[in-house]
Image 1 (spheres, chains in turn brown, red):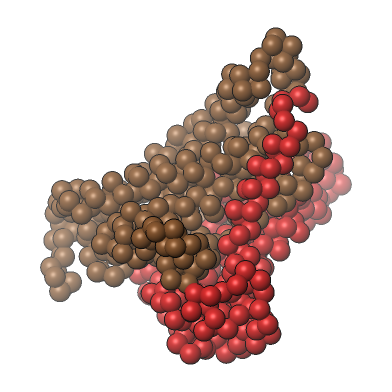
Image 2 (cartoon, helix red, strand yellow):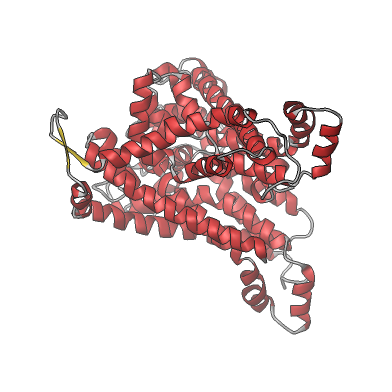
Length: 293
Length: 281
């Protein structure tokens, strides 16, 4: 952690840190502290007076059936987005790893979706899945499926999950491919000599060796599905129809930004903050451990 | 290597994957080459039409259609470029400086400051949206480029990455510089910065995409048309997604919105992948 040789300047390091720390304090720590403080206050409906109420806001939020419904939507949404981003990424990476010629060409053709903003991906798929003008949307209706994500909550959720996963595949693909390429070929050859079939080799040799990558991606993709997918939901469904696609993040946006419920939305912010803290700590503890073996 | 039994299977699956990725982009491009009525009737063919020049001209310079009143894409592209580049330059600069400070100096509070920067990883803009907005309002930065970019410039990721790289720089190099009489800043400019080129290139791609694709923050901080980014602008054009809207215009703007980051990721793919996967070398 520490270097042997260092520069002896006394004040210079503080000046070097100043810009980063100033932004950190003004735009990260101060607002985060404000969120925690506001979450302990209850305002009257006109915003004129506020009263310190300890954890009452949390009690109100957590006993609200709509909040619990949003938590359930988030659970379904996040689990499915994470799975449908990672599973195809792993499949594509295993395939790209087997291709001897043209592997880098395939990689080029599979990484660029990462550059597309989630909200923009939503716009692209809105055009494709639009029930009356979209190519696939119309196709589904011609097949007799009553496709309309604007009316059917399940379809709306499916579409936002699909778009979010679509956008998440290439990131996971890059990491899986790098993980696969770092597995020594001698290990695989040894398994082949021992008579393991290719399926057997994958599940008992390759997949366990990939577990650090898989675990890292799991945490990153869950965080992605919590926050970055806000753009997808905001662009396609705005949380609807009804509350079918209202995730915790979307609810926070609506309660805080549209309905201006300061105490309640601050409590929601703090709860989401706790979720990120837990996920980040898990992720870094695991990475620290990985360094040792 | 002899994993797969079937030589063609990997190619088939990879090509299927590419088709799933390219398909919506292709349809979007096709949509940007037809007239609005053709699309609104639900009769868009799968081949390009002849409206490409008119559509892109309309998208770039007017942003207005029959039903949609948007901002000209030239302004949207300008705003997104300013936002992405300011974030990239800002993040890289302040992270280089702070990584330099925590790696090459010994001073009281060093680890404390390092952890302060690290903890910002756990405070995404989404969870502190409203209090951060309140700070903006107090400073008078609502609807300004400063408000759009500066709060996003702090970067734990970039600082950690540069620090990891700086730790691999041999002590002998620092010794040599000190024997030659170089001070800290001279060492930074003449030794550290040239050595960090690859890492800077990698972060450039990652952070450019991060900046270009920002959504929630520009959504709440910009209030006037002239400050909208292209990702916000296009979602506003969609509105409630009626069948009879100016899809040709919207799809032209969509193509313009995705081109810059996609081109950058394709041109700088090598650095991008290395920066993500293997930042220590």
